[in-house]
Length: 156
Image 1 (cartoon, rainbow, N blue to C red):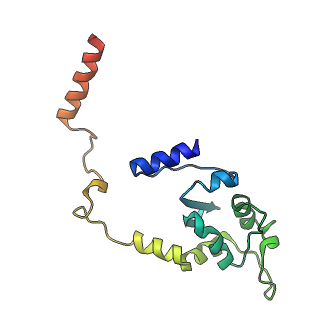
Image 2 (cartoon, helix red, strand yellow):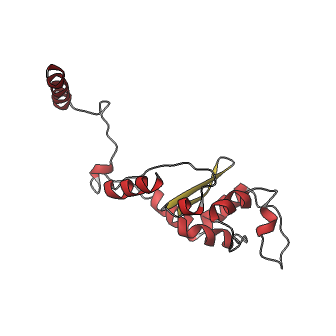
Image 3 (cartoon, rainbow, N blue to C red):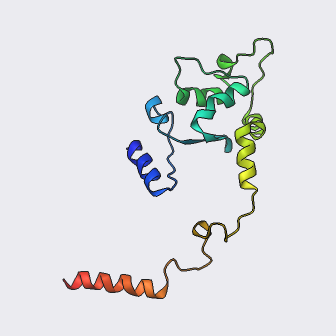
């Protein structure tokens, strides 16, 4: 199912949002981008390939035989976080979701995302992605065509 959604997203050039709790490694590897939310805050949002480097930057290392999808919720929990700490020269204090958010904003992926988000949008550059200011999704002529096509089908 996820492979089908991935191919569809690439074919139509669109975004598909899927929420999964601890997916298998094979499923996790199919995603392009990951949004990791903890305590209602976005802890990480970026390329799947940058998730491990981000947590290593924060001082936590995913063991070689551990799946990244299993590692992520555990490294965010206070109970399991200590087992992934790899800076033995520094004592571990619990890293809260707020600290992860701050670390993400300092990480290159977070900085790049913030730069993109703070760019003003101009309709002239990409009118296809501009929000419509109309309250109706279709114009009067398009509505007439749709109704006519429906009536034509009903008459057959």
